[in-house]
Image 1 (cartoon, rainbow, N blue to C red):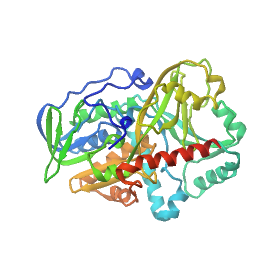
Image 2: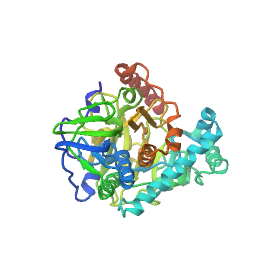
Image 3: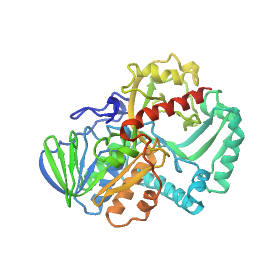
Image 4: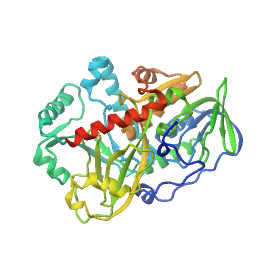
Length: 431
């Protein structure tokens, strides 16, 4: 099964000590499931995907139960970098070379729908999520600058994205407050938000629409049949339909998903409030490393910096030091600033970094494997699952047609294989 770090604790666990949990305001409490319950749809996981699925189905009149092992937004949805990446995980030319131009334009249209869908959720439900616009992609190798310039122009003029603007070295240094990058691009349709506030807002909206949310209700097993029975420590749900929405925390519930969605740990720190406005434009940023660095300033003037994956069975003992060594070369003047919070979390990745939307059984649906870009795509994926359950399958079918091969080596050997591959790419980044 999974290495220890990828398995959530047995029984309900509180939110990790993150800046998100400290700044989200009062954290709501939803009761654990007790006794037997009947439902039209049982959703496993109260993150972006599960809550969006529940909201869309509850609004359509379905009786929906959401089962969360810990707390709403406890997993990647409440711990990630908060960055909104527009478009797909791969650039349009990569997609077109593999799937053709027509399919690529459809996927880009879906990505734009996902962006607008997220904005509508925030506006329609009055969510205070500290939404900000702009995403900078910083180039860390000089020889890649010409490619970045051409790519920005092609994505804008040929593929109709953005408009994405190229930044030279001086413009990048001004925007980021560091001169270590050789240039970059800026996408005004990207941005960032407070992910835990967004998850909590989705939960409030789903509950108001009639969905029943149960925290501290880990699904221990699923008995499949014409109706599925989901066993939890203190109760069970019998449902016509099951939605698997736990992303990197689904281990053991569906073999097909286990084979194709790999849990991977990533780490973030939040400094104490800073005297300087490091990034005056307020954008989020990430760079061109394969093992990517990503960062932004928070509303209360902290540097929130993410960097470094973990390839051992457990989180680092000193997560502050682990992330600081990634931040210090980019911002040497911040290498000794106090850090108020440092935390880790688990995301789900696929071999080709494309999202995994499938129907492994006639009454079981899954969406996972967002590969670091779930802030925008995961709520939309939940909506797509809800559409498909209601019988509208165009969007689901388009995503389900995307190839998602299993990781080499099967469930037992995929993790050491990934460790070897990611270690190689990490070394390549440094060299």
